[in-house]
Structures are given as structure tokens and as C-alpha cells.
Image (tube, rainbow, N blue to C red; front, side, top):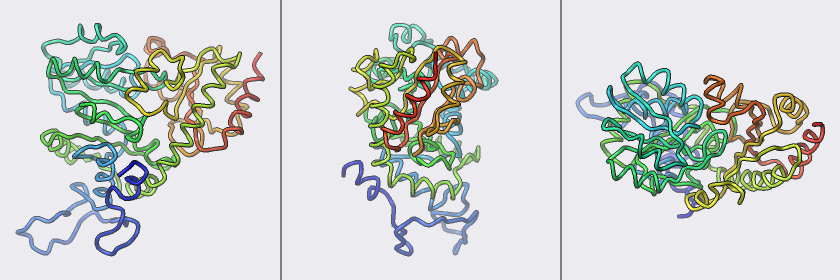
Length: 380
């Protein structure tokens, strides 16, 4: 079954009780038990809910995994995975990791005796040197947010296997349609369901997928104990959104490819970050592990004043936090995705005051190009 067909038929999309063509919202906190001496599938929604289960089965199918878990946010998924580590453990993280992940690792994990080393993941020698006797996990994010840096997943996996290290990856930008880390041997795949999987900017959610039964049982225990479950309404909205994900993503990726090319030749744009461009320093590696360049790009202007002018005069994209909606979204990482980390850390990651991130929606690309050109031409 191919990807577009999977999105419609590869997981429960018909209610087994009524035959309804859409899985209903089982908006219940608890479930009647006919026999208190026998276990049944559903007893309390924190432990499981039919609507959420249908979604989790769908995510597992898309990821090519045995197990999937739906969380109340992307950060709930990330934090649960990182708390698989124990006091005294050490992990290796990319320098350019997402701001929320960076803050959690730097400000919260030390309280539990968990240490981390931040490394340039384009330097496999440096990554290997960072391994300690206490190292337990390598955490990846590729392409990274917001600079679209690419990690060679295969190269990292060779190191991880040699040292028997757990691997986790944030796969949000590429989605399970275009990059399949579990097939490459990665242990844990994290997705922000808020983004392309839902696709309509009306849900906050996160997912974790694994193949290992023991890992799955631990994640299930943590999810139940922490209580960071996804709500029924949100699960239903994502089930609805996923049905059109294939055609949404095709248009968004097509738009991103054309816009990246346009921006790369504009005299007012200093730099474009998009792994689909042949000029990207890791283009070949990215295209060997993903189907295309994705629907997100970043571009750098001269500075803050230029950012102010462009964002003020853009009329089609919304200026907002987040990405992955049907509408194009322009974000300013300095005050949005990376506002939670220090200016020093942002500079170290390369997140400058002139950087803008564009998540391409499904609008007519000609309109987006005209809008961008009009705003950029106002710059001196």
C-alpha cells in the first residue's frame, strides 16, 4: 500500500461499532465495565481511548513502526523520551537543536542528574569524541530548526551501534511521509503533530514511535504516569487532517522548492537555508535519506530593520509561531521558536537577528512569490 492510500486506508478509519466513515469522538473519561473481574480494552481515558488509539495506530503505520503514542504536545513527547535517561546518564545533542528542547536539556535535566554535550553533528569525529562511559543516548534533529542543518543519520547510527547507544530523532520537518528513521535503525522517532500531520493550525500534539517492545512498555508507563495524553477532540482533528496530508504536503513542498530558488537569487537575501537546494552543503546526504527538501526554509536578511520591513509588508503569510499549516507562516526565531534560550546560545547556533523561517502553505505559488518580491523590494 502506497503512502497516499495508507493515509486513507492503512489504519482504522471506519468505526468498528457503527460503521461510521469517520472514527467518532469517544468523549468519555471512563467506560462501563460489565465484569469487574475481567480486563477490557478501555476503562479510563488516561489509560486509553478508542479515538486516540485509532490515531496512534495511524501514526505507527505511517512511521513503519510497531508502536506509537500520542502526547499533549511536541514538547510532552520530547520530554518523555529524554526522561528515559536516568541520574548519572549522559546524552549527545546537536548544537542547533530546537529551542524548547535546548531549554529542557539545559535547565531541567540537570536537576535529575542527567548531563548533555552539544556537538556539531556535521562533524562525526567530534561526535565520537563526545562519547563517555556514561553516554546512553544520541539525540538527532534533521533537518534542524530553524537553520535546516542536516545530520547524516546513517553515519550517526554506525557510531551508535558501535557503542550500543539509544538513538532518538525529531523528524517533524520531514514528516513520516518523506523521511523514515525507523527504517534506518533509529530507536525512537518524535513528531510534532501540531505541524504537518494535523496541518490546520488548530491542534497542539506530539507523537513517539518505536519498534522495541520494552521501550514501548516504558513509554506507555511514563505517559500514563505523567498524564501527558492527547485529548479526544485533538485526536479526532488530527485523524481528519491526516487524510489530506499527502496532497497538502505535495503542494507545500512544491511551493517551498520554487520559493527557495527565488530567494537564493534575490539581491536582498544574504543566505537561504533549504536542503532541497543543490547549493546546500548537505544536499546530497539529505536527498539520500529523505524524499525531497521539505516544506520549510529559512532565509537571512541584513538585520533587524530589514526583518521589520519585510514582516510588516507581507500580506499573504501569517506572522506567527509554529509551522506546518495549510497557510504559509513566517516566523522570527529570535523572538519565537528560540526566544526561550539566551542570545549567546542563539548566536552560537547561528540564529541571527536577520533570520526568518518560512513554512510554505498550499497557496498559489505565484501569489506567494509576488508577495515576497514586493516586500523584499522595499529594502534599501
